[in-house]
Length: 218
Image (cartoon, rainbow, N blue to C red; front, side, top):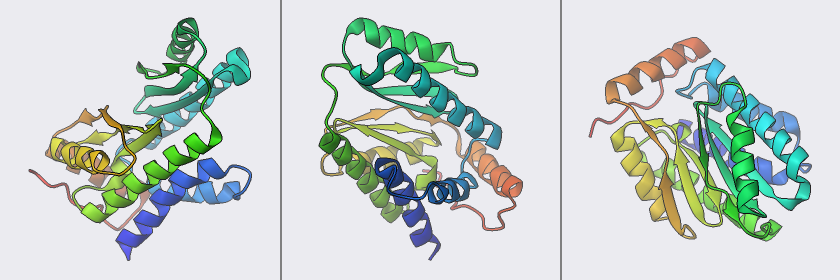
């Protein structure tokens, strides 16, 4: 039952952004709030990441308008930029704009120079992400809440605070998921002991009496 609940919440959190305007915003808030209780980042860092993403998107929209399609994913104050920009100068500009946002510690600029992607291509990327998330739940090798998946043009970017064993398992899932052309490993590797400490701390801080799945030391 718990496994099914996590799977539903994760897939829902993946699909909801692609259905903006078609799904109550409150549903997204509830889903995010539940998943946050299992997150290895502190609530303060999670808040910083959300603020960074919002500010980065706002700055990019003001500067480029509809000339670019950009996504910003901040995890542990490290920002991944994906999408398409019209020129190399625009790519450099968006990286510079993002890097000046308060609390940003590192920028990973994976934006490509080229035409803006179509809605169908973006929908397909969202579908690939949902498949990776669903298959991550099925493996039972790691808690999929600890792995952030971003798919752009068939390239799966993986972020998170994970052990080496968790990273290896997540990478294998992504690589063997249909539609994935390439996997980019952006994980921050921590020791199994550090992972257990973070899991227990977050469980206590959130008031969640259900312990998260154990970390496998492999």
